[in-house]
Image (tube, rainbow, N blue to C red):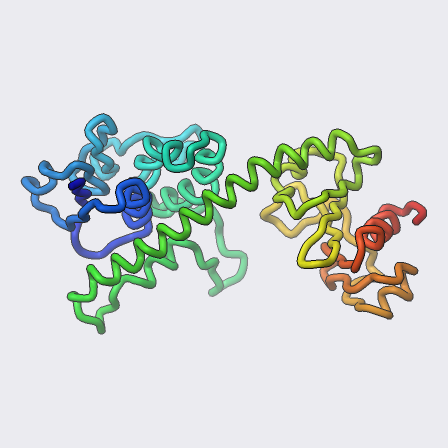
Length: 292
């Protein structure tokens, strides 16, 4: 039986996700919590303890002097990143999918574990709630018995396994969809408006291309018009939807736009909805200042 060794005591997202990834590859592995040098030596895989990084021997710690290296963007590796570096492609069965999961899930967890803030609060007293916070919620509080520690750890690992599985599935769709979005952009007559035939993940792809202003695609039985942004993580549109549409619904929006099946325009002017593809395209052409 494969034995995976990690430290005992309080746990964090880093080792929880590292072990979750390993258990997806080795479902029958035994997880041992210890700081005993002898037991660490006996482990088949050692995660976040032991003071050694050596992927050839499946040793994945980053606490030693000098750490365990950094990525090209200078974000240091933590245990999850070291495990993913060796096993991510095997788990995903595709290098591009593994790279996407690395960027979306693994790197932020490693950054947090190494004390690096990827985002800073804009409002006093308000903070983003991140995946590391979700894992931290499983750690028993001072009012709970320490005997709950292993049970809660196992619950956190189960949670992390599901997140990894879903992010792999999302990354598979993203990689395939990105290729399709690029092809549709290449074929578009007016590259300010990109009309997609499915609800692909388009934001990252189109943010890297300067021309697109709006995207139309199906979603939840309707068709949506979205504004494109230079940075998909910031609410700054390249061009807002018309001010006169903000917050309007149904007949009122249809009257103002002349689009009979217009349903809704967000008050922050980044999205509008129509019942049909033709209606959404009509709204987009109005927003572009063209004729319907």
